[in-house]
Image (cartoon, rainbow, N blue to C red; front, side, top):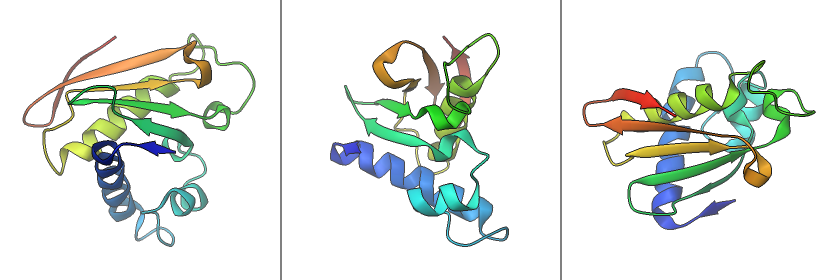
Length: 126
């Protein structure tokens, strides 16, 4: 579920860039279903929600399938950090609008935020 026009535009940018990346490996990966079919091993293929709580901010929720199901253990799995940095980098190919991208597990028990500056440089995570 995408909430808000800007959030939808950013998610579409991510899907477009990701689709280009995988275009030689499989079919169309520029849609959520196509990405999951093409790259079921990628945790960013399991996005359940994208929203923008404030200008320049994205909040992305991923499903348990993205880390193999079961309970999420941040000491064992780097999924949130990987998804945040990967999605932000792919969106940055289009513009520098995303200032922070937070990825969370359902219910918000675990989160990771990637903070961005212009010119495609990830500066720090939290």
